[in-house]
Image (tube, rainbow over all chains, first blue to last red):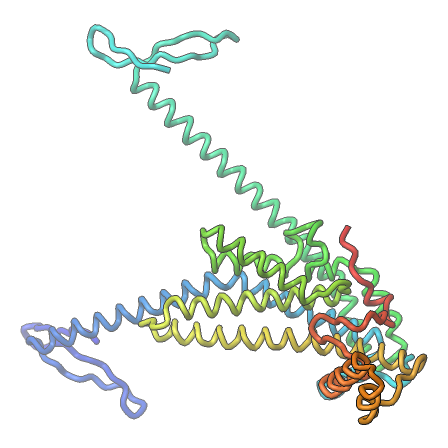
Length: 104
Length: 303
């Protein structure tokens, strides 16, 4: 989406880009009220998209620290559980814990 | 400190200063006094900032060292685990030895050293961080939630929890508070205009519930397995009386109603747990039977 200078007078015309059939094509909207209205609409949509991304990034950044700690707890708990169960004579068979027959 | 005006209507500040080891009353212009106060304030703030930065640096170094120690402990455990997963029973004593030699692993990941080093274990850190996110500056809400989580932890852990119990219970509590945060986030702003954020929140909520269910399942599995090994031993030493459909009826006919009721309840538990002795899968209570693997799953002492 951009105002592009064309012609001898270098007037600025508004073009809206869109993807169709795997190719990008430009839609001519002129330089009148329709073009100005479309440009304002596109700018607002672009600003909203940027604000949405910023909000999401902020939320992700806020939770990143605690997520990392929680993941460490998960890994540690799984590791120690497995180690304990193996050490007292269990083994995993296709995800199911079973007891060794020869362990008393 | 007080102010006064001279004959030219200039404002002066009278204050006390230390000059040559003596406290003297001096008079200085108000502008100079304000400049000095501002400079002192800036210097004090700079000092505080430097102190805070130094404390953070020391904390980061300590955390790094702690993690390095954890990695040093985890590496032999992982190596031994890899061998144990292949089914070689000869490695099991070595695995027990590694677990015994590194009690800091339990302390690091769980709540075992609650009284000793609150900042040292991850599960509590996770819980506190979630609480900060949920409660914000509302200290009353944070404290209420903390008490609720402590009660939940005590209830799940039971009277004599092993280190593994403590660790798994802490994990459940951490997952629970994460779920609470996800629910609260969804409840406070259910009609978010930002679809990306709404989808992200929904995914996080699903993920939190899955993690909670997984944590509960792990604790249940461990308690079930350990209880089952207890039951096998107890059955060998003292075989239980065979359950009979008519036994409760005979007992009732003999006027022995409590015994009949107990037997019926036990039969129901067997149907639920698949065990000969009733076991609470979540808090591990088991009719007072001792754990056969007491060496490995020793109850925690917290004095």
